[in-house]
Amino acid sequence: MDRCRVIAGVKSVSPDMPTRLRNGVRVKPHSILRNDAGSDKHRVESEEEKGRIIPHSRRNSREEEREGFSSQGVIASPWFPDGQPHPLILASASPRRREILRQVGLRFVQVHAEADETWPVGVPPEEAVQAIALRKALAVVPEYPDGIIIGADTSVILDDKPLGKPGSPEEAVRMLCRLAGRMHRVVTGIALVDGRSRMQTTDAVSTEVWMRPATRQELAAYVASGEPSDKAGAYGIQGLGAGLVTEIRGCYFNVVGLPITRTIECLQKLVEARRASR
Image (cartoon, rainbow, N blue to C red; front, top):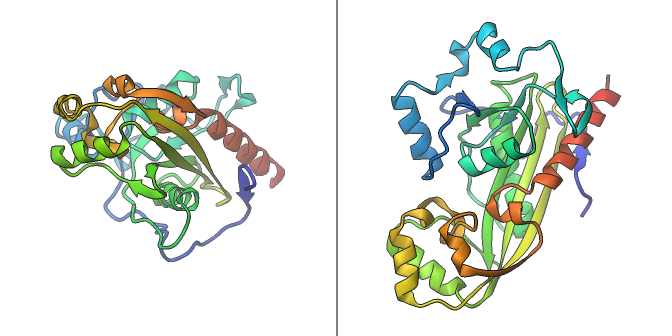
């Protein structure tokens, strides 16, 4: 698979990849969003109830200038000699992806993008997560036509089948019992879209993860902590779930939810392609 392939001048995609926002986008600068755990969707709704998530249509240039996303000026970054591209948009409400981007010094606006997360039929996991990540990124393009948008989707793969987020504590325990004492893969698809030119780049990263054998009592106690409820595969390696993992082979940040090195590489290629198209 070619890494970080940039597709120039893409104006449309297949019918299972919606290109417009269906229910609106709610946005908040990453530096103000809370760092609590929990479901991305529920977290965004609770912030909205407190009036802390501002629809982009109600933001003005002065607000965005204070946050460092005005159309003028340069945002310094070690990864971009000419300055970080902006506005940079994270099309995910995930607090984990937000913290990973912050860790490497990127400045961005975080958006909860609504997109169809149904797996495409009859495709390998790496292709499926890329397709879903692209749907998420494309859903935000109408709201940020001059931005570069990052979409991502993570899935746990066991016996070549995806394990999604558990629908109940009982299902979470069953998932963990299947994973205990075995190796599984965590696959994350990333998609970057240049809203201005509609150039796209997608990629996928896979990490092998081994879990130790654990008793059902242990796993039930872990599920009772509430941590697994919003996570694919019903565990979080960055939290209490670290006590279940014996070994990983590959990118740790991929297991958390965003392979940051590959994301930076793809972002650099997209910026180069944007510059070359001028």
